[in-house]
Amino acid sequence: MNRQHPGSPTSEQGFSLVIVFLLSLGVLLTGVATMGRISFGWMGAAWQAQSREAREAAEIGMTRIVSELNRERNRRLLVNASVLDTQSRTYIENSTNEAITGSFCTTALPLLNGAFPAGTDPKAQQIIDADRRFQLVSISQPAASSEMEPGSPSSRNDSDANGTESFKVTTGYDPDGTGTAEFPARAGELTITVRGMAYRNNTLIATTTLRRTFEVVPKCCWGSLGGYGGAFGVDTRPCPTIGIGIVGGAAENDTGEITILGSSASIITGDGDQIPFVYCIASSTCSVSVNQNLGTGVKVVDAKMPRIPMPPITICLDQNTALCNLDLDDNGLPNSGGNLLLDTGVALSSWPANFRSVCMRDTATPPVTTCSINTLDFGHNNRTLSVDTRGGPIRLYFPNSQSGSTKTIDMRNNGGFIHINSSNTGSVPSDITDLTFFGCQPSSTRTCSPHQLVSIGNGSAAALKLFAYFPNGDVTIGGNGSFEGVMWVDQLGSNGNITFIIPGSGISQVLDLMGMGGTAPTQEFPMVDYVTRATKSLQFF
Image 1: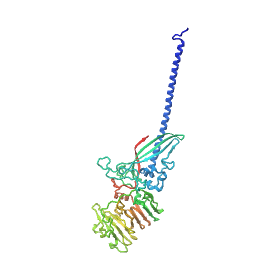
Image 2: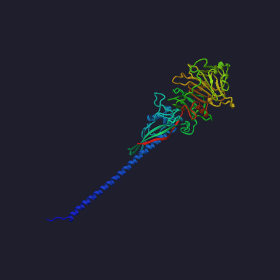
Image 3: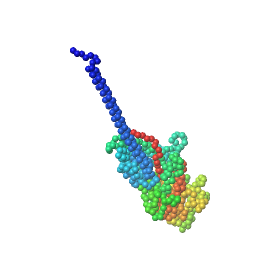
Image 4: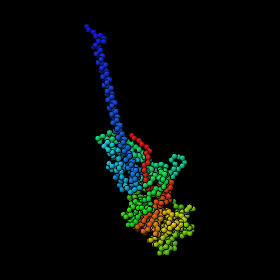
């Protein structure tokens, strides 16, 4: 028998086959691993590209939404988040809801087509291009927790869930516990969540969600971030919202009216420029009847008017007595007319007895004369009441409503007020607030019902300078004269060719008097603009 010995050719061939097999297997496995790495690399790169596209879409959507909300006509939504979160564009952009959604600073209604062109639902997917889309997921804000901070909407009417939260004023707020009051404390917040999506051939391949919280700060209409004690900017001037020179609807109960029918009537600034609009306070609509030649519109807003300052004298509060019902018949004027002078430059003891009994004068510099009056009746036609404020301002308070058709101020026919300062050149008054009328303001204990009926006329050729604030007043302006000042009432009516002059200086004087001016205001300014200023937090998930 033949035997194979070790080292023979046959055994060497078998061993070589094993070696070849192992080497081939190693090469195969190496190739598979390499192909796997390449494939996973391709897949990872594709996934990263798709995720990047989704993230870009979310960022683009966020930018478009914020830019849209920062447009002047849409800024009211910065403090009305629930409206944008729950309502359609049809609701938001409708003039019927202007009081809720409209900006305080323009008559232009909200328009959101820049960020949400796809239909009327702001939460619908918005197409950026063939491969990218974004979608508003939510927009929210916390409840207001400090003064001057916009928060979630609060309703003025319990049945209306779409009211607007205004900025709060608390002069003693001390957020950092240093013992020093700060005003205002800090800005508000607005959180927007946007989903970005990547598509291929209309198939969703990646999504990313971006949540961003913005700082929202108050600002003046057409102005800087100042006007709020310099907390948000270096400009400490009061907000120059010239349209606040005439405000209707001051009762804040949807009873406001503005009627100006004179074919040559006008509402202008102190420089003679036409004022584009004035305000009417309402949660929905205000009754407006304005001659088309006027050229001034009426902006309906849902805002809160300031409180009337407390008077130092309340002798006629809730008093319907002979003492408090003043009649110029008691001053010896002829029935055919005549003029009665109230001069703050002389001792109060020298005043007519009926006025002296309901007025007082403080010891400020200059002294302020304050009167508390139930009704003021001129008694006969063609009478005037002149007020010389050379010695200091005068405030006439009319704290009560009258029953029936009794007027709070009744000038009769062709009567009027004359405001002068005989110490100035041309006897021109120094400030419009040197002559101020305050009416009845509703509260938890006072209804001020029915409306106070007030007639105010100009008794001279010069413009009558005054500030009149009758929150529950039906004020009628008679004649064809001119008025220079500020008038806040519930219902305003004028049939003559009246010229209303609203000077910027007069607005500032009123704001100071009402505690809304200067560096430490004590009441909130009702007509405020808003803007996002910075990002407080950002999160992708």
